[in-house]
Length: 162
Image 1 (cartoon, rainbow, N blue to C red):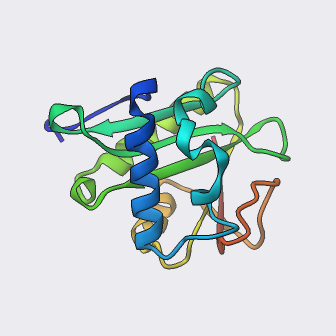
Image 2 (cartoon, one colour):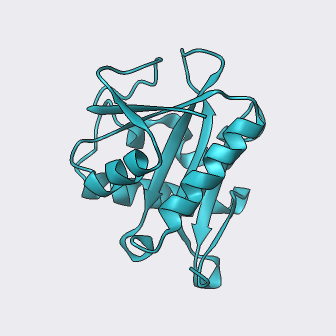
């Protein structure tokens, strides 16, 4: 993990972060309406996660190349004490190195420090490694979606008491 750094997103990261999101989502077949790849914020992640109880991190490798992202924000249309884990995606070269676990830990600590009591997330059943990570961290599966994220293409929902 010493070859990688997790840090808050910078405005200069926007294009690379959008590329990571589009690359990963496409590789999992998560394209079209109902998936986060279509969210307006994808091209302006820095701006979307400034203030308002929101944080977005990036994983950078050599020469500051963005290899992944992830963060949290209030759950749209949800309880005010619930945040949503958002846009946690890693390129193939950054997977299997403990970076997802570390970014998840940073996000959960940050969310708790900002006063959130619960963390919600949506994912896909076939994103098995991600689901294992969330379950190992203590997230419990839900039978239906919470809030109004606009991600009707997701089919797996989880909640964690912080």
